[in-house]
Each structure stands twice: as structure tokens, then as C-alpha cells.
Length: 387
Image 1 (cartoon, rainbow, N blue to C red):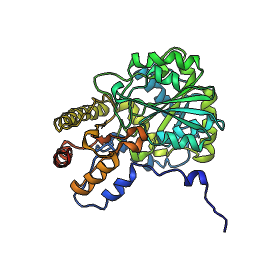
Image 2: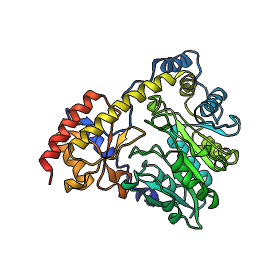
Image 3: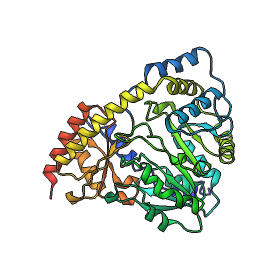
Image 4: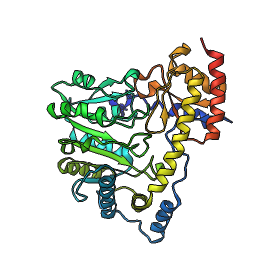
């Protein structure tokens, strides 16, 4: 029998996040601080709308691009929050989570050999999705001394005549870094001059602390060259509902819809009705969750620094990215031993790119009670193994 498998897929490593949590699920009394899963239930009024949509028999396909009412609410939300104006009929697509939006945006735009700039550490999907779409990933290593922000100099030095797309993911997973107005302004003219398209993954846009999120699409000359990706998983605690969206120029969205038609058909119908309710009436829920995350963020940062672990202050998402280079272990060794000895699961920084070596991703999308227990265990581990 001939080999039925694609070499491209076989050679692709699995997600570095998941292997620890397969172990955790079988380990008694283990605490996981790794998965980016809000510990809040989806707000009741949003769940209720999903239940009501089922009771009303709203179980048929929607249009490929999504419910008209949802697309209108997405446009209203972006106008209200970030002063971005989009045509719901031509510039919006509703997707199965933000992850599908990333995939089909890359597939809609890439020709074989086109280069995609990927600032790392970053979400695990960008690199493999680029490869599967025929593109060439070009890694830009973000630096701790720059608070893991993309600098103008790094961007300029990475662009070639084959560069087509820049992926921007701020607030960032795994570092918690943000890029504020001045940070983004410093790279906008480079993007325009070099004629790049930006995929701006803003899934954590509602979860920023002390500074309000700024979308790069809001800068002059950027809306027409930016695909903004967002969704409901993080801000509204709707991970399992699998609902996201992308907005951008009609010529790109039109091709993304074509791929979506053949691969997916449409996002889940009851999720879309719940998404309308979330956007219309979910602001107080988001504010409550953001305040809770902020308390956990400050608690975790203080505790890690008291242990002697260097950790820059994250201003977005719900992760901290402490440096463990002083421990004399690789990130993988630290995470593995911590799980074996203290039953606490964290993610090695290398799961988000080689430049994540020497760091760990720790999520604070967990209760203060669980964080306290986990931190006591981590503190014991650090004291025992410190060089």
C-alpha cells in the first residue's frame, strides 16, 4: 500500500501546549495553569439566547458569511469600541472561532513562496497555517528587553522582496504584551511603504489593563490593507461556542468566504444568535471579568517576583511570561519536573517558538484560590532547584 500521508503534515510537530494537559487529565490533584480557557461560565443571558434559538428551531444553515443581524452588531461594536467602520454586507465574515479566520485569511492571500512575517513568541497556529497555505514563515524574535513588542528596526530588517503579510497579535499570547498607539504608529509607515498586508489578531482586545486597546486598522492608510480578526472566546468566556469573525477589504473577505463555503459552510447557528446577545448586552460581563483578571494578574506578578523569577509586567490577555533562565534548566525541563514533582502544569516558552526558550507561559484565567495553591507549589519547586 502506498503511503497515504502528506509529508508536509507528517513533518509538522503537534502543538506544544497540549502534551502536558493530556498528562494532567490523568493526574490526581494536579493544577493546570496552561490552557487559555476562562474559568467563568458564559454569562447566563448569552446562554439563554442560545437555548432560546434551539427552542425556536433555529437549527438550519445561515448564509455563508453569517447572520445579517450578527454582522451588523459586529460593525456596531467595532465602531463603538475602536472607531472602525465596515460594511456588514461586504466586509465581514463570521467564522468558526478566530482560528478559522486566521487559516482562511492566509489561504486567500498567499501564493507559493510568499513570505509571512511572524513575530514570536506567538500563538501556535500562525506558523503551521502559513506552511499549509504554501507560504514561507519568517520569524521575528521579540525581545524581553523591548517588552516583547515589535520594533520598527526589527520589522525593516526582516522584509524582503518576497514579503507579503505581517501577522500582528497584540495583546499577545503567550507574553501578555501589548502595542499601544505610539508603538503601532512607529511601524505603520514601513507597512505602507513596503506594501504589506496585515493580519491583526485582536482576540484579546477587550482584556487590556491600564491602557485601552488600539487597532492598527484605525491608522490612516491601514484599513484597506488590514484583516482584523476577533471573536467571542476570550472576552465573553465562549470558547466552546466556536464563534469568531474577520473584517477587512471586500476583495479579501470575498475570497475568504469562498474558502469558508467549501470547507465549513457556516458558523454554528445557535452560537451566532448568542453572539448577537453578547455584543448587544455583554459589556458589563466583560468589565466584570476584566477586573477579576486584573486582580489575578497583579497577584501572580507579585508572587513570581517574590520568588526571584524575573517577569515583565503584561498589560493584556491573561498570561504572564516569567523568565526561568536563572534556574539552570530548559523551559521543557522546568515544566516537566514541575508537573512531576508538584503537579502543576505550565507551558514551556518553546511551545510558542524557539525564542521562547528560558520562559514559561502561566495563565491567570483561573480562580485566586487555585492560583494560591499552585504558587505555593511553584515556590517550593523553585526553592528546591535554585542554582
